[in-house]
Length: 106
Image 1 (cartoon, helix red, strand yellow):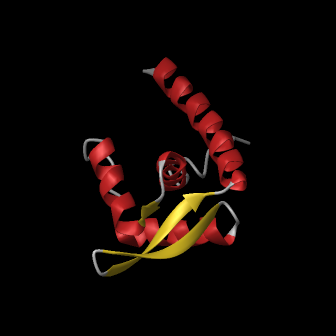
Image 2 (image 1 turned 90 degrees about the vertical axis):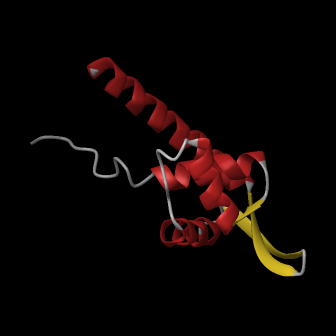
Image 3 (image 1 turned 90 degrees about the horizontal axis):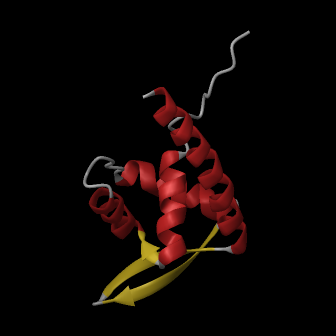
Protein backbone atom coordinates (compact mmCIF):
# COMPACT_ATOMS: atom_id res chain seq x y z
CA UNK A 1 0.00 0.00 0.00
CA UNK A 2 1.29 3.43 -0.96
CA UNK A 3 1.46 6.23 1.61
CA UNK A 4 0.18 9.61 0.39
CA UNK A 5 -0.08 13.18 1.67
CA UNK A 6 -3.83 13.88 1.42
CA UNK A 7 -3.44 17.24 3.15
CA UNK A 8 -0.71 18.36 0.75
CA UNK A 9 -2.23 21.77 0.03
CA UNK A 10 -5.02 21.90 2.63
CA UNK A 11 -2.77 23.30 5.35
CA UNK A 12 -1.38 26.20 3.32
CA UNK A 13 -4.01 28.85 4.18
CA UNK A 14 -3.90 27.86 7.85
CA UNK A 15 -0.11 28.07 7.92
CA UNK A 16 -0.03 31.47 6.22
CA UNK A 17 -2.79 32.92 8.38
CA UNK A 18 -1.14 31.79 11.61
CA UNK A 19 2.20 33.19 10.43
CA UNK A 20 0.69 36.58 9.61
CA UNK A 21 -1.15 36.75 12.92
CA UNK A 22 2.03 35.81 14.77
CA UNK A 23 3.42 39.12 13.51
CA UNK A 24 0.39 41.33 14.17
CA UNK A 25 -3.34 41.45 14.78
CA UNK A 26 -5.31 41.68 11.50
CA UNK A 27 -8.85 41.61 10.15
CA UNK A 28 -10.07 39.21 7.47
CA UNK A 29 -9.73 41.23 4.28
CA UNK A 30 -6.36 42.55 5.49
CA UNK A 31 -5.21 38.91 5.72
CA UNK A 32 -6.44 38.22 2.17
CA UNK A 33 -4.42 41.19 0.88
CA UNK A 34 -1.34 40.33 2.95
CA UNK A 35 -1.22 36.78 1.58
CA UNK A 36 -1.45 38.09 -1.97
CA UNK A 37 1.10 40.87 -1.39
CA UNK A 38 3.67 38.85 0.57
CA UNK A 39 3.64 35.96 -1.91
CA UNK A 40 3.86 38.29 -4.93
CA UNK A 41 0.37 37.08 -5.92
CA UNK A 42 1.59 33.48 -6.29
CA UNK A 43 -0.97 32.57 -3.62
CA UNK A 44 -4.32 34.32 -3.79
CA UNK A 45 -6.63 33.05 -1.06
CA UNK A 46 -9.98 34.81 -1.28
CA UNK A 47 -12.46 35.53 1.46
CA UNK A 48 -14.20 32.22 0.76
CA UNK A 49 -11.05 30.43 1.90
CA UNK A 50 -9.76 32.78 4.59
CA UNK A 51 -12.93 33.31 6.65
CA UNK A 52 -13.76 29.61 7.14
CA UNK A 53 -10.14 28.99 8.18
CA UNK A 54 -10.28 31.91 10.63
CA UNK A 55 -13.52 30.63 12.14
CA UNK A 56 -12.14 27.09 12.40
CA UNK A 57 -8.93 28.27 14.05
CA UNK A 58 -10.91 30.40 16.48
CA UNK A 59 -13.19 27.48 17.27
CA UNK A 60 -10.13 25.33 17.97
CA UNK A 61 -8.68 27.97 20.32
CA UNK A 62 -5.76 28.85 18.03
CA UNK A 63 -7.07 32.39 17.51
CA UNK A 64 -9.10 34.92 19.42
CA UNK A 65 -11.07 37.81 17.98
CA UNK A 66 -12.29 41.19 19.04
CA UNK A 67 -14.42 43.82 17.36
CA UNK A 68 -12.83 47.23 16.76
CA UNK A 69 -14.11 50.36 15.10
CA UNK A 70 -11.55 52.04 12.84
CA UNK A 71 -12.46 55.05 10.68
CA UNK A 72 -16.14 54.49 11.48
CA UNK A 73 -15.93 50.87 10.26
CA UNK A 74 -16.49 47.96 12.57
CA UNK A 75 -14.09 45.10 11.93
CA UNK A 76 -13.24 41.83 13.63
CA UNK A 77 -9.54 41.58 14.37
CA UNK A 78 -7.87 38.23 14.96
CA UNK A 79 -4.80 37.44 17.05
CA UNK A 80 -2.91 34.24 17.74
CA UNK A 81 -3.13 32.42 21.07
CA UNK A 82 -0.50 30.22 22.73
CA UNK A 83 -2.29 27.18 21.26
CA UNK A 84 -2.06 28.86 17.85
CA UNK A 85 1.67 29.41 18.29
CA UNK A 86 2.14 25.71 19.02
CA UNK A 87 0.04 24.82 16.00
CA UNK A 88 2.10 27.19 13.83
CA UNK A 89 5.34 25.57 15.05
CA UNK A 90 4.01 22.11 14.18
CA UNK A 91 2.75 23.19 10.75
CA UNK A 92 6.00 25.03 10.00
CA UNK A 93 8.04 21.94 10.78
CA UNK A 94 5.84 19.78 8.56
CA UNK A 95 5.97 22.23 5.65
CA UNK A 96 9.73 22.76 5.98
CA UNK A 97 10.25 19.00 5.77
CA UNK A 98 7.93 18.77 2.79
CA UNK A 99 9.58 21.68 0.98
CA UNK A 100 13.01 20.15 1.58
CA UNK A 101 11.85 16.84 0.13
CA UNK A 102 10.39 18.55 -2.93
CA UNK A 103 13.52 20.64 -3.44
CA UNK A 104 15.60 17.45 -3.26
CA UNK A 105 13.48 15.97 -6.06
CA UNK A 106 13.83 19.10 -8.22
